[in-house]
Image (cartoon, rainbow, N blue to C red; front, top):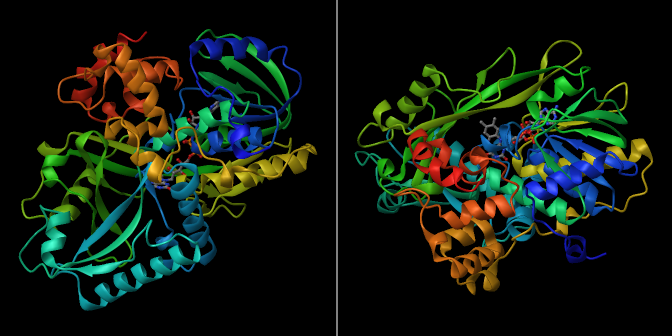
Length: 512
Ligand SMILES: Cc1cc2nc3c(=O)[nH]c(=O)nc-3n(C[C@H](O)[C@H](O)[C@H](O)COP(=O)(O)OP(=O)(O)OC[C@H]3O[C@@H](n4cnc5c(N)ncnc54)[C@H](O)[C@@H]3O)c2cc1C
């Protein structure tokens, strides 16, 4: 089987397909792999399993990318920060996976992003040397992972004028240029998850959102349709728990303790047309940084915090005032005009899982992922990061295949482009609007064709918002959006700014 022949099935997810596949679930012959959780890990695992020829069902109790996978910084990391703590293996794994995403699996969704550390007087010679050394180590990582400088350029020092071109609102007084390195940036994390789920569907997986797994064992589960309340008991030869910070609710033998990471949302104007990740060391630390990132819909995200977040895991974690002050204070140290709370247009927070170990200490699995087996045989895959989802999925499905003795081919995802993947000359030849190519890749052609049939689809969903009715319609027919919030909060990220969400609500409601 070639990569292409594995994904020639129908990738369109929608309410009709969901209803049909839910109906068939009761009489479906034995399922090989049930994957629980529709974040990047679960969607990646479903794709891995289906591409190996296994009969695969993915269930997600809310929507695709409902959990942590939509609250990330949306960076495809080369693993530099793991090098700093001596974790060479994890750093190399990240750099390799970044290369696979940029070159093969999702070239349409990942772009190279310059990272700029402005050399302001507060940065002492020692710290500058440390950051420079880190960037050079990052270059070595990139090259050892086989990613050429044509895709991600080498790091370098830039003059003050270039630093200000990249970050126009950076402080000028005392600016002695900047240190620049390159990493990958996703157009959006939730869009990666949707592309993974659809590619899994094309490879034969059933992808069922609004379906919750209850009473899970190593070879069975009760599935509840959260739209109707109906339940069905199913058997599966292997069960993979990919529920992230909720993993301990599915497999009670593990215990997690979350830590919260917060971002603030600004309009691009507040940063004067920022075109790099403006990266500012946290005063008093040699390894922590705050960064401002140019983002979708003409916005800038400012992150990131790391706060202990004990207690029950909420559906939508919220930032605290202390986190907001910390982010503003740190970035303001590097800006000409300080930003205030009035400039903040929105905020979001996500939870990283920490794993409680047998001696009651916590292990940080936000770096290295863990594959765990429960007494009943549930395979839990937890931790890691968005960048390494593919390797995590491979490890989880390898474990499932071994445990259940499944007849499966080898993992194929290294060479399996996701739905919409397009790059190079083929991308240059596309005639669709740039923003559609960035969000949909080769599938932008579908939107163009639809808009030719019905020009009203070119209307923005609200004044001043760069999302069209064509995109909302495609979200419903092809991307599995089942209600307005799926369109506003995950297929697009309009919802990160409450005022924009309210303005676009009527257009989203019109689709249902
Ligand atoms: C603040 C922050 C910033 C980050 N930034 C980056 C970054 O820039 N780059 C990077 O590579 N990584 C980053 N990460 C890490 C990355 O976001 C996570 O590792 C990844 O998103 C975790 O995905 P997941 O699929 O394991 O979990 P989730 O995305 O949380 O998915 C779990 C899913 O399971 C569902 N679920 C739960 N229980 C059930 C049930 N019983 N039945 C059915 N479904 C269920 C949930 O609804 C949820 O959708 C960041 C993490 C945080 C917290």
